[in-house]
Amino acid sequence: MMREDMLARLIAQEAEQGANLISLRAIVEEASELGASRTLARMGLSDEYAGDDLSELRLLLRAWRDAKRSAWRAVIDWAVRGMLAALVIGLALRGGSMELLR
Image (cartoon, rainbow, N blue to C red; front, side):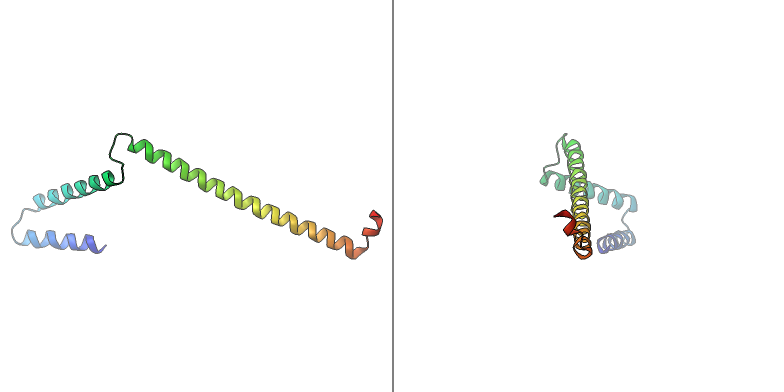
């Protein structure tokens, strides 16, 4: 937010000094697009396949999140089953039902 405020103040200052507001906005827009293009180029996303690459990365990330969620559900499911099995065994030992199995 500070950068936006600073940019707005600089534009206002130039407008007060007689600069054309439309020209200033055009300069800011061009500078922004140039900066975005440079950033994408540095990240290796400046070719025509960049959109496809980003789509594949999103799909991969979504699949990773789904797999992680499924793994946690499986862990919780097994933990609950283990606790229930221990409870049943404990009740069987306490009730003397183990002698029936012998």
